[in-house]
Length: 352
Image (cartoon, rainbow, N blue to C red):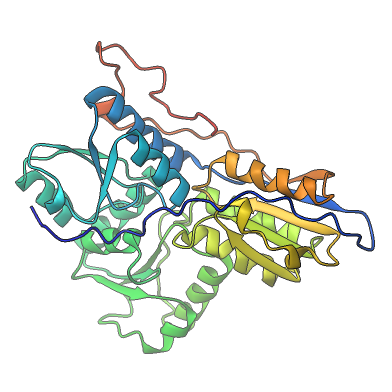
């Protein structure tokens, strides 16, 4: 086992809660609360998978990378006995290890098997779909133009399914430098958590260069990412300030800040905790939009609403653009309780 120090960013302890000042503004103070927001089905499944593994097998249960990109969730699971590692060679032979919601490459799966680890795959089913598309198109000898952010765990996992066939496209600015072997045998796939608008702009530019570029069988950007972006677009039209709850390494949370600014918000900020909201952000602001990334538990949003209420923003108006009721089954190893009976949480879906 490697003796290297784990390099994952450690969860930060939230700052001391303080009451924001209720300063006068021109107009009626209100909060526009985006819906949908927060936990998606894939995140819920992954977090429940770690909790259920701890229930069944006891602590410690190891998790490769952060199970989802949220410092609060990681901190809570650590307190319950989860140990987060960078790579499977840091896990004791024979131990239980959970693969994160972002997915892993076949090389990681094989490395875990070689150490005799009892692996539990908590990859979001929507990410797994993209993996299968990569395998299928590589088998048919297509060059895959994978739109995504270099170094992101999901991109590494997808590219690892077909390393000889994948060319990474970080965004529209990469398009002019892309080299293809056969312009009649190329297809695009994407990271599931990207900005919908930017991804479509990248595809548009790719198609200008390569008219025979094929589309994936279905949209790769996940429903939750799209829904949260649609909701914040609606909010941003009416909000002077937008606050996005989510962590810095959460791609979909960072995108929400960008989308809010693009669609009309005068200012937009991302915070992990309500205590990070700065008084000066509220100066002269009557209308505040609030949303959260797909890996954020609702308790963190409620803390933001509580702090804003203390500053006079007590009128909370929900802006709903879609309903979400999708749930995913837990990994097969976790669908029964310790006695062997079907577990009531087999579908996840706690709505945290």
